[in-house]
Image 1 (tube, rainbow, N blue to C red):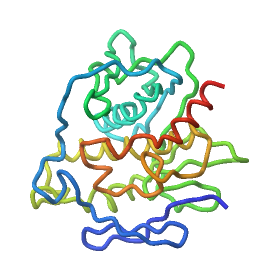
Image 2 (cartoon, helix red, strand yellow):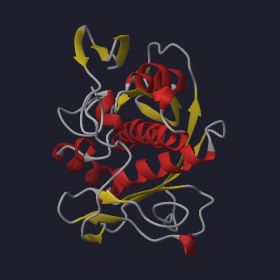
Image 3 (spheres, rainbow, N blue to C red):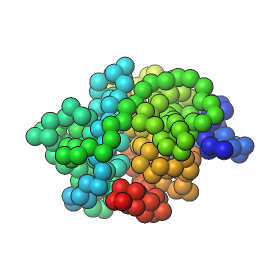
Length: 256
């Protein structure tokens, strides 16, 4: 039986998620959310160069996404995977305009790069993945969160990630509160920044299923089954590191 996450409801500011019969409530609170802190800022620290690339993915996002959201979402997904030697970039990005990914020496979080994306693709692109907006009911055979999903056919993941945009905006983004203001009251730039961050992180999770070649989830980190709305939206990426077991699995898969 395929494992999946199904969203079963939002009451006030509480997001309720059902996992194979178990229901857990994840209130959208956390740093910068419903506490008066700013959502959109990330502190910089001393940086070191990221690992030598092990794999590269050309990621094409649905053109229906606003350009600024698409770009920032790609950069977020790329920054999450950069510490593990996985390059994620737009296939159109000119390598000459790129400054490679760096990692925060103190926290281990990857830092944004300058240029058209986070890092250039290597000479041999291991895969081209697409992200399509699809707001349909998730059925049997699909590994899914409320916000994104990827299909497995005969145990092999497809190269299309389905972004359930309506779920993400209505059941995720719309439940957030900042300085007493709901998402529809935020400045457009702030709304797009948080939306892109959330999209980038759910895409990064689905890329994880593709890279690791498994429907399963981990106890902690990027590949855990439940990702709270506030965690998807907050600036820090600590919750989106790979579980040590996933790091080992990734190394075995990309180097074989």
